[in-house]
Image (cartoon, rainbow over all chains, first blue to last red; front, side, top):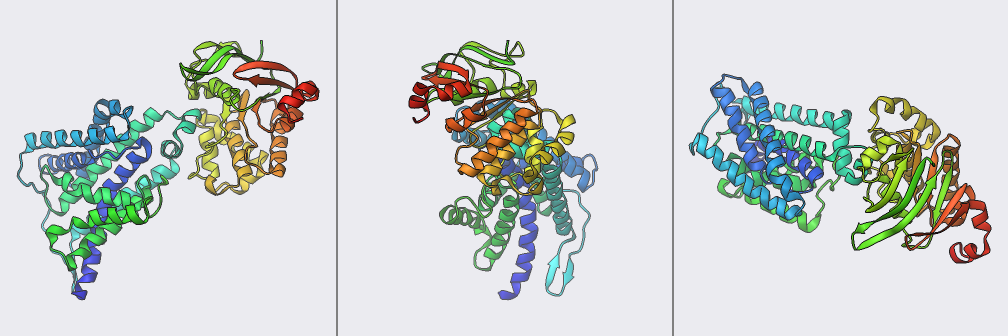
Length: 288
Length: 235
């Protein structure tokens, strides 16, 4: 049993890195718009299917297909926020969060209407796993890890070095002061909706590259993504990365004593433990 | 006409809760104008109305003869009025340098040039430019908040109780900085609980009671008035 731990740790890091991408999207949206946007689940699914179409029907390789996933999910996120969720915001964050659940059900069924319920797989070359002693690592897993790390680096560079990224952090930190200083919070909200849901789309496709996709791809990942954001500190982008790795590794290690079908209990447990022991999450609620 | 002229302004947080009840106020070029009065007199509300955070239901606010009442805060900032709130006046998780950059967000072309100037004026900000604003002391935060306001080279600087929560020594240092900023040609409207010190550095002052003008005039003369001293300045 103990001999399985290194393999599970590696799998956990791989899974956590993929989970971090949509978790950053969720936490960034929360930091700026102050509500948990549960429609992230359906945007992850939309991204996965956009990438699927780009890959299997347009013949794009993985990286260009991921760009398609980002753009399509981001665009749907921008439009759905502008026309569906924005009108809810004046009614408070609970109403808006519930509205986002309704939105995700509607979008999920649009995907089901177009693509059906069956499982779909990306057109990827067959590759043999690499073996290091007892450890096995899939080349696709490593590619996914590398893509996740690059995406996270781009997000951090955007927030650290660009005027818009800094303005986004300013709005997350202190919206009324940001308004006084000339930052247009409505424009920042549109950018964060596009980028956050775009990241959800990339996350959805990365999950699909590892397995297969169907209209519930995003929904199944949502608990782990939400747990990652809460564990790290909802609203904290580095926290989302730390939380995703914690949840990813925790879910894999749970296989030592739980059947795989109970793996999702780890997400619930992580949320419960954090809310009891450290409600602000591991890194607190600072946006950056 | 003054640089900033407020005439007959009625404003508050709701239609049933009007704090300012027809207030007049003026800041001329190069002046420090102090606003004093008891709690609830409408001092901070006046600054918020000028800064665009509250929309007056009556009256006018003119900046160099241009009406600005009802404009969004960012539009008011772009026109040359910089407002420093009493609390939550910095971005705590951002560095000092990033805070200054956000201070100059409304005018990005000039922000890089002004950044060096502000850090030269306030050496503590230059020394701590890589530190998160939340790690600064209360006095340093107030300096940072003023530095952010100066990043747009305002015609009028609105300061809401800048010495609140500071030690007497830190407050004295802050008042000296306010005077130095004013000597560079920035007109300042200053709301202060610490009225004695504020009247010492101000050219003119307004005394407000219950959202209305009680009296106004040369700051030194008001500070010497026995009745005003007894009622508003603690004897």
